[in-house]
Length: 201
Image (cartoon, rainbow, N blue to C red):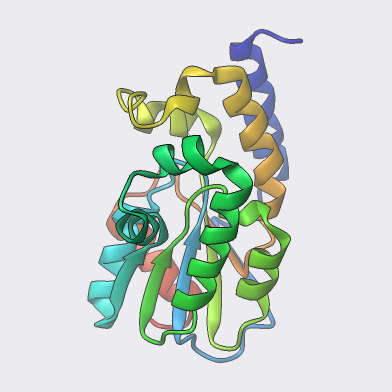
């Protein structure tokens, strides 16, 4: 097992080798403007920062799936995990996403782990009018942006597990209709890129 810093360097090197030259990768099958935009990506990718910017520009609503789950459950997601386990949470998460993704004029931000459920990916990739947008970051960017939030993101303290989680999810994120590399972009620039890639600029 490599030391954590070497794991990060290795993953980031793989990322740089496999990422396209263009910062935006779009699915050529997207021929019509979407009725809803769903944002996915690893923690620190900016989903809850960029989402409201995109929604305001379009005159749409913005919803964070995790916020809805917490509001309906009446307690934080960390408590949900502790009381009911991850399997029960993923069931609730999928049902919430399916319900919300039926709405039009919506920008929806997913939790970082939602992409791991095949039924959720299939729903978002095949639902008419839905475009799934991946905000792609290097793991080093996640660490820099999330520094100081360990009390709300316990996985940051388990750095080996964080690297494994990043590596496992990255190819799933990249199944999205659109992938945008956001490490060097400001939130407004990311919003611009999303609107261009979705044909809504």
